[in-house]
Picture 1: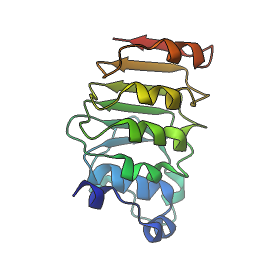
Picture 2: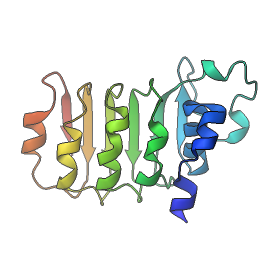
Picture 3: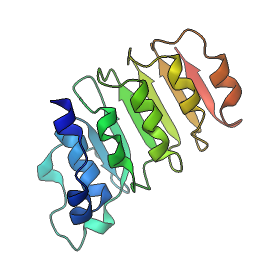
Length: 165
């Protein structure tokens, strides 16, 4: 069932654009987003812009997924073309695993802040993919299935602050 709710519809992406399509995916799977220039997070379809003339003005800047979200790696291609996402929080998302972390490359040019906490399916296999995020300024990792973080600390950008709990 997770595949059905996470799969990418290229037809829908072409119809409404990458940001609207990604927002629909996130909301369908219990995550929240914040648009550029907005203070509040949205998590319900009724809060999506309806007027096609203004849709191009809505760009996702921040994504927050918690234990109620069911986003999976199948859906991460939704991030393609969302060129304003600077912050991603994955907090206790049971469906996040190494395959999802591998697909963070869709956000490699914009992602500055990444929090991954209490995602027990994230293992040391994810470390090489985390080091491929050249614009990270802050990486916060908490309670993951990783014992040795030394490779991560050696290979992240020099100006990236790392917090490991």
